[in-house]
Image (cartoon, rainbow, N blue to C red; front, side, top):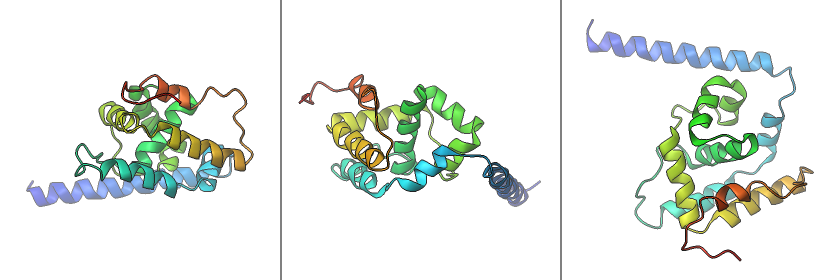
Length: 166
């Protein structure tokens, strides 16, 4: 089998897999999906601007291969579901609702890029701005944070010494 045939087969398998996943999700749409509802209500543009400012500071060193919004959504789902860096990748594979929340991207990072992405946000003292923006949007939508423990606690665990706690 030459490389053209192998590549063609690979592409066809990918197309069929993507089609099957999207069809399965359509079947699940009749069931209530709060994650998809919240995803459609959140304005992700402000987060894109925040994260792009981090990576355009220094010629895009260690820029994530995945879209910055996909990376941020990984952090959000980690926090909301109490998942580790290793577990978020596993849950992406296992949960079709997670795949839909990420908009079925071609590339999902493993634990190392997730950790590095979080570290970049902390090292650039952006965690307050990021989580404050998300919480503000959620509050406006009526999803109020009653206990005050998420999502900032997660970033505080990784806070760099260079950032000052206000």
